[in-house]
Length: 348
Ligand SMILES: Nc1ncnc2c1ncn2[C@@H]1O[C@H](COP(=O)(O)OP(=O)(O)OP(=O)(O)O)[C@@H](O)[C@H]1O
Ligand SMILES: [Mg+2]
Image (cartoon, rainbow, N blue to C red; front, top):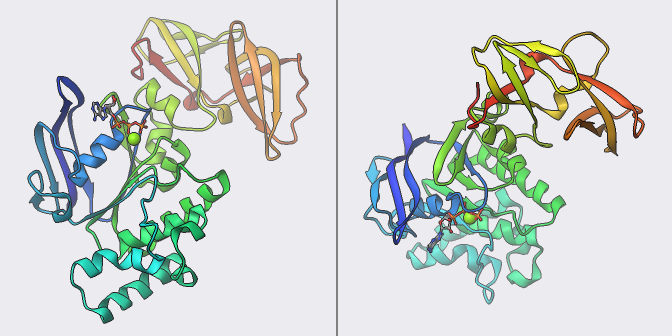
């Protein structure tokens, strides 16, 4: 069953249309992540689902109810924002129980809920503290706890980890994933961090300028991006692109060999290959030659920048590789891992 259904939704701020007729469905229990560059409409879409933002056309349903006309608190959703917005003068316990008290739940039932949520989030020892006595990650867990006690149909998250330092982000990312695995709720999560998107999502919705560029599992987006935009957005470090000329399916690679392709296309295109799919050439297969212009050892891998004419390619080589600055290098790859994109960006 679809838990959340978005149908032909259009949003305008005054005369400016920012969401241009979006449609998609989210299944019960799915973890969906919206990604895309700043301003593409991620928060607007999430706020429309939450009921915090009106829209001009289309329909949003949660479960089997059309919620267009429902107020946020009537929608059975819980939202965790970037800044957590805890009540500063209340203890953790009071913050978490506030909505239940307001709803008139009896004391014993509230205590039971609190105990459960505090256990899941491992914040039982923090219940008597005020928000200012907590670390960023602890505050975030309290914000999650406040959302969780309500057993919502859908959790909505808008960049909840963006204020945290790198280590805490990674820890909290794992906690959110575990939480989802434990409670199995439907979750919609906004981020512009593609690593967060890849690691958390069952499916990712890539947005660009208020339109869906592609929806798919992380593996689908990584292996079969439909456009140069998706290819460049998913994967880290990003895919390399170099302009090539294709003549009757024959591709002239820069500074290197020719490659045959089955595509029926002649003209200019972008050749795409991910850094992890390049290796130091030891055969006569398709390859690209250039000069080593930068070496970045990361321990497990070494990132090597290669100048190829006016272009630069990044190759992720094994950590025990011993490249030398300025040396010529020939990079080979498996053609099935490469991609070609037309000038307009769609995959050929
Ligand atoms: N209140 C508003 N009035 C007018 N335009 C707005 C308003 N809020 C957002 N917009 C515009 O709507 C578009 C989408 O904004 P939105 O906040 O959804 O982007 P976002 O994808 O969440 O970006 P970010 O990653 O920066 O948070 C942007 O072009 C933005 O300028
Ligand atoms: Mg936003």
